[in-house]
Length: 114
Length: 284
Image (cartoon, rainbow over all chains, first blue to last red; front, side):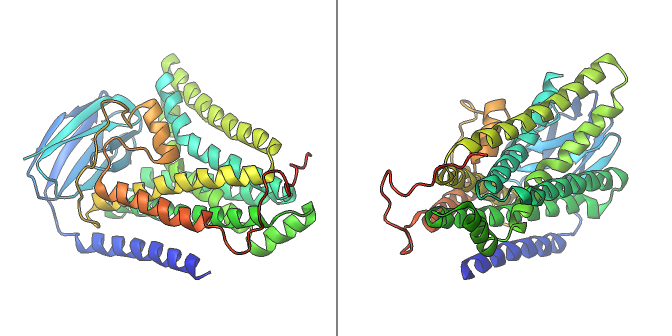
């Protein structure tokens, strides 16, 4: 029984911790626009400063829902048609991070942190 | 059409797998009249998915930028907990159950509340549910041209295929013995939960809650997890083409700890002989 409780406690602690940390980190990091139109990301290469958190402001100008996804960044975010969604990205080490639209794999792009 | 088919099949696969297992489980312990626990769990999962989908579409703002992510994280960790609990319980039960159908039901209801089954069904459906709802919604608003219709049709065929898979598990699961079913599914659920835990850890890492850890290996040239097979393996056993140290570490630690919990032979375990003491799968 106490094993279950321990598991539950760990889960809850993680959940609360994440919420607290997110709330604490709610200062204003730079916003970088990214648009999805006609199954293409504009720009397809996003340059950002390394080691600085930022917010990708993803606008879906298409008529279908899209899912901004990056395995490298571990981000998955649905952007309904005609909507804009903010995607918080943590400070990145210098490098290239690929992203794509999971609902339409032809649309791809990458973030270059330098 | 093909693209939409693959998306919904992949999103629906995990839910179908989990629902197939929980229904078979209820059938195995002779609790067919309690199918409603799984049905309600699944139905509430669909409702919650639609609700979240509507919320995300109708509103925007800081709450909805973070809200879905926090909900997704909670669902992942709750799923890991209930799957582990259930796997542990099944393992114990598989050893203990040697009796008649009625005593199985009694034992199950006493030691394992059936609402856990409902919760498993709920998290199984809700985990990828909102995404699927938004995807389908987008396709349906486009279903005015022949190609739009083809995509929508493909999406529904994908869901139907996933459902057929769940049904196949249920049909096949009925034929194998209780012990074997418990043994197979406890391993399957263990791997599934390990994969989910590592996904959750990766998300926390991405949010900056956990420190960023280096990539352990890169097998994206051989089996990409964006792809069809890699994607399925990702859902089933948590395969990653470029996992971080935290994801791999969490996965392994979970497998070792939960595996030890599940498979260590407790003092209550009867001495097992390869042939003796098996309850034949009861046919219905």
